[in-house]
Amino acid sequence: MFSSSMITRSTEGCSDKIERLRKALSDADAVVIGAGAGLSTSAGYTYSGERFDKYFSDFGKKYGFRDMYSGGFYPYATPEEFWAYWSRYIFINRYMDAPKKVYEQLFRLVRGKDYFVITTNVDHCFQRAGFDKKRLFYTQGDYGLFQCSVPCHVNTYDNEETIREMYARQENMRVPTELVPKCPVCGKPMTMNLRSDDTFVEDEGWHAAAERYSNFLRTRRGKVLYLELGVGYNTPVFCSSRTGKKTAHYIGKQRISDVAYQTEEYEERWCA
Ligand SMILES: [Zn+2]
Image (cartoon, rainbow, N blue to C red):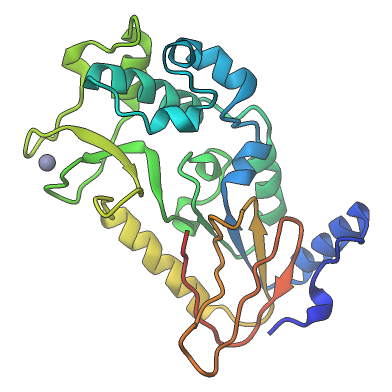
């Protein structure tokens, strides 16, 4: 287990933390990045304020929403209105580049290293910044994929063309009816491939990524740097695990800028 002396203290200066991280990265044989929503917020994917007002002022006026997140839960009366909202949401948070180059900077730090990323983020920022998709595991889905809402089968479907068209052709907070996506198998409505309940589809790609992640953890030895970025207590990525085992060890949850080494055998699960 990592030593308690490795835990970054809040009194430590910022430049000291950066230096510690630089050294930890250069010493590490492998790096596991766990990333949550805060990383995308720091990249400028904010869900309220100016961005909300720019793209959702009409919905805000009609329903009183103050942020995109709240509007995503609203039970819209028609699929045309639902998709007017969600196509904007997906378009600006998945297909438009993030305003700041945070992911690109992170990629420069690990490029050439033996790394793996596990993330609860569904916005595709890692891939757009150049991270190898074979070294990524998106546990909670992807805004860029549709799935059957039932679901009657476990395939997912790239939605870029449909989302762009819905975004471009909507009027008065409605998309044209012919653009409302239907399941190609059962004809029921399609929905986003996002984990919110037990209808979430874990498709072939999801399982392949889960297996690659598991293999990475199992096969790396030496100094493994765990870097957890932008997570809150609601959506941790590295969880303390092995509860229920008397010989429990824990992987401590590290906040942004903190680092830890873990070199012993361990298990891990995600619980976001
Ligand atoms: Zn279906």
